[in-house]
Length: 229
Image (cartoon, rainbow, N blue to C red):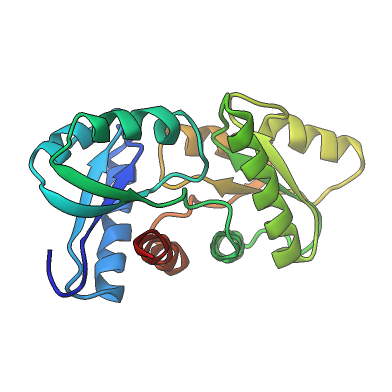
């Protein structure tokens, strides 16, 4: 605790890709730059450590937990509550998932611009996907926000746990006669899913994951402030 408020406990999914871990750490460095003095702690729910349960074991008092996740799936519904239930010494307020949000649409648009994606034609929004229908619906909402941001159609797709896949969405758009199709990686960091998204269609431009974009860092603080209120 300090004058900046309770610590921000950022909970990421985790990836075995070192570039993905580095991207998460860089994102939280941006959060610290935007809110000097705010304690920012990182934990993971899967794949790599420090695991959320281990981090909670070393904390006490009040924290604000912000999931660095783009939709409300199993980790938010089950894993995070279970870990908190096993740590009664920690009083946690839990924010909403990061997505969907207009700030993410801005970040996605910037990532497309960075790879010089076609300025017209539809965009396939490639999400990790989930077996949770609420999470898939959130991806569809994010596609609507991106459509508004770009002024052209954004098609939701799912790398697992839903249809269409990004590859199927790209193929369908090509079959309809669209030559200029880009793929927007609706993913937090580099890793397995990002590589899979990048292979969605021969010659198709694919943006980088959201990563340490400043709009994402601002959104994390927005979720933190909202949970405190």
